[in-house]
Image (tube, rainbow over all chains, first blue to last red):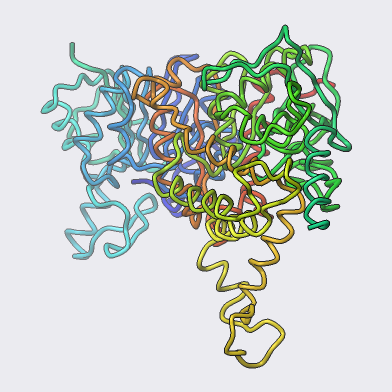
Length: 218
Length: 394
């Protein structure tokens, strides 16, 4: 699961005002005044942004103790916990949105986590680094190394990211567990959204990150 | 014996007429209905306050004390002459600043610093209650505090804060009077007393009752005082407030004022000397029967049982925001207990923050210099005060 180190180590594009573009995108997918759970909330940047810009009632779970204590000291409602073990304790329909930002690939059981998210919340927002990005593919193909990029800066032996997936893989998982994709956006390395009408293969190759708004298929 | 009498008399005097504290008395028209099925009437609550209540009475913070604490939370103690027990947290520039908040700290019912308890005078007999005093619970303590709040004309507390037994009161406040608690900070506590903790308390009580001076609890009437028993109880309990690492760091196996062992049962080791000192100083300010009653109140505490078995039901629909804090080396109220509280609060969809603080100081850490805890309490209260509309208000 995500920790502070992800956020600090990864060089993710930021807006002119210094906010991470993927977080801005995530926040735009959340309705105003909603009740939101941010799983793997790190140092609380997204929760803070959601509170400021969308007036949400936000809660967070974070694995790292430093992250939690920093969040609580900022006045955010955050608890120390693990996405893999603690989501089961939340009742059904407790939130409007459950967010998993840059954390999916660090969970032990991504599928179970995703299922819990859509049980606890009516919607889920998931953002993750796309392992199908061309720079990743080229490193493996030509250099023969496990890829290291700006948003995936770790060596294979000390990475918290144990379940990488591509945008295509994620779409497949959503189909398998019967989740409706309400909205999907791929960001390139500069944090700009790719063409909306592009086919999946294009996103899968040129999107550095995928951001998905999901809901239950009822 | 004369020495015993003096200490015993002083304890009775403080139990009725505490120094440097306010007293609220509740007459026959305001009985305290106890869980034991009887009413306590008349009764009194001794308390201290710091700061000023604002015009709309929205800035009051109730501070609940632990087992052997009292209302002298942020001022010099009239008996021990030591600084207030939580001056690390409460005071000018501290996370709970009387310049912003109106702080109320009551002595618990069953205590011995001015609120009605076994050392207080029984109005029916004119003599100390002793074991005639009804057994009280954490819920009774909080019920009495709510009556004090009514008396002060305060409808809703901005926050209730406490550690250990004080934390139990915080949780009870949130469970009993959710509409009256805007924010709750239960520190180093649990929603129920564990079997191990009940066991430790029983050892303490047996130490007191095994002292021949205890006289079946009638020592105030018979001019004796079970000082040794109470001191042993305190020594045993004190170990549970520390940690192996803290004891090792502080004392190790060092000898006390000597180079070699004396091959006797003197206090050869520093740690022995320290514990004896803890025991001896404690009996000067605490009533042995009160110790029995308060440990019993903690033993009976079980919020889940009160809520029909499911802890989440104790907090169902709660509007209160919580900040639960635990310490890594606290083995009396370990993090697992706080985590269980947090799970129940999550299941009740409560707004909850939870932080575990790394320290080797054990359970007592909540009373000590723990900058990270101060930062968390400060941040949490700041956030809550913004939500409450207190910020910027005088």
